[in-house]
Image (cartoon, rainbow, N blue to C red):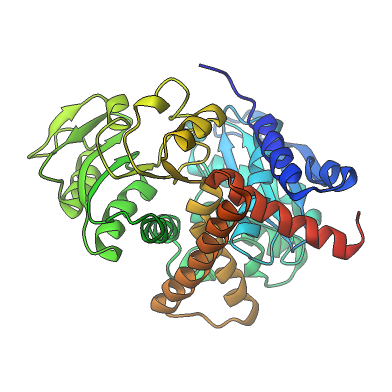
Length: 415
C-alpha cells in the first residue's frame, strides 16, 4: 500500500479544489502553506528528579475568517508535517461548517501513557508558557486532541490566566463544565456525523434504519451507535470493532448493552449474542452505512473494490486514501468526508467560545438544535457543490471550504 505524507495529501486536495474554482496563482500559493509556524522546547522536571526536554509545535494555518482553531496532541510520533496537515484540514472544516474561525493545530512529541499526572500537568503548563503570546480568544483557540482531554485544557487555561492576569475561559475549549465548558460537547462529533448521514440518506434515497457497521468503538464510535438509532429512528448495527477485535450479529447488536460491555470489559470482544470476525472484514460487510471511526488510511486501494456500504461517514481523520476516494466514487459509494462528517466537534467548540464570551450558558437541547441547523446547512452546501462541479463528495467539500477562505483572503486584500 502507498505510504502517505499527510501534508502533501492536503496540498494536493487544495490544488484540486483551486483548479475547479479557477483561483489565481497567488491565492493558491497562499492557501498551500500555514501562515505561521511555531516550534519550541519545553523542559519538564520528571518524577525521578531528571529534567526532560520535549519538542512542541503550534501551526496557525489561516486566520482570514477568524481566530485559528484546532487541537493539541500529545503523541510520540508527532511531526511538523502531521501538524501542518491537521491545521490545513481544520481550516477547511471550519469553513465548510461556515464558522467564523480559521484553522490551527498543535502538538508535543511525548509518550503520555508513560507519564504521571504531575508530569502531564507540568508539560501542559509548559506548552502554554511557550505559546501564550501567540494564542488568545481573538488569535488562536486550542482544544484537546489525541491523548489530551478536558483536564489538560483546565491546566492550560489556568496557566494562561496566570500569565495574563485576566479571566479568559474562552482561550481554550472542551473544558470541564464547572470552568466554562459547554453542554453537548462530548457527543458533538458523533452527533454531527449522524446528522450528515441523515442528510445524505435523504439525498440518495437510502433508509437510515438499515444495516450499519462501525469501525472503532471509542468515544465517537460508541456515541455514533447510540445516536444513529436515537436520531434516525432505528438502524440495525450488525458489526463493531476496536483495537482488540470485532463482533458481528446478523440480527443486530443492542447499542446500549454493547457500550456497557465495552466500558466494563475494555473491549467489544466477547459480547453476548455475537460472533467474532476479523477486524479487516468489518469494512467489507454487506451494510448500507459504514462509520470508520478508528485509524487513518483504513480504506485504501487494497480494499476499496470490496467495500459494499452505500454511505461511508468518516468520523476518523483521513480514513480513506486519495486512490480509494476515486475507486469508491466510480463505484457509486457516497463518502461523507471527515471535514464535514466530524465537524460537529469544532462547531460545538465554537458554541463554547460564544457562551464564554458573554458568560451565559445554553441548555443542552439548544446546543443540539443549533448543531443540527449548522451541520444540515453544511451538508446541503456540499451536496450543491457536488452537483455544480460534478465531482466526488470530498472534493466538493474542499471546494466549499477553499472558496470561502479564498474569498475572505481577497476581501481583506491579502491577494
